Length: 218
Ligand code: AP5
Ligand code: MG
Image: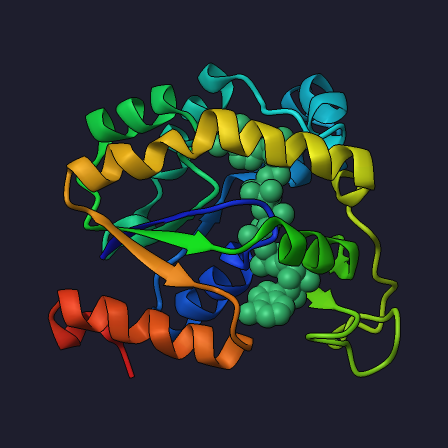
């Protein structure tokens, strides 16, 4: 099954995509994770976009489209995938439409107030992108990754000014995709206010109601 997770920063797209990816055994493709890895590894792309990303801006469409096009050529995408954070402009959505036939777009809904609470408490294990929240999903040991014991960091774009910019870009450039996919009858809304377990269970029911059971794994 080919899924797109749409929604504002901090709504829980990455958290749910990582769980669903394990559950359905399909890859979680996060453009944000790929771009952050490029920045960390100081690749040409990484160096080119570091300041934009850390300041909360969007990477140019041609770069993200190329990146996704290359990733979708990998063998592991044959049974489907979860696209998290792509597309986020109309240009990207049109490019995706020329590449692939998407089965389902899930729109993650959350208020700005709650988004700010989630982003300000988010902590990340930089090498893997494993994500925690100081209150809602704390690590076993404060400030340390559960698996490796290494330090957790605050994402540079979770600073207050960068969050404000991300939210305003989301409204201007990404929110129009809700209507875009609604018109194509691909969109379903997911209320992400409840606890992660409940959001995940609602997400599964939603996908289940649209798709053959064998797609869902066990
Ligand atoms: P990206 O990494 O995609 O960031 P984003 O869309 O802003 O979304 P986030 O990762 O911040 O939030 P999320 O929805 O994944 O929430 P999470 O699960 O972590 O993109 C980053 C940057 O890369 C962009 O700004 C841009 O520069 C660039 N980029 C990426 N894709 C691009 C593209 N297509 N085009 C151009 N540029 C692109 O959850 C947030 C917190 O809440 C966590 O702490 C989590 O533990 C907690 N939480 C999750 N669910 C719950 C719950 N149900 N209850 C309580 N807490 C919860
Ligand atoms: Mg994310």
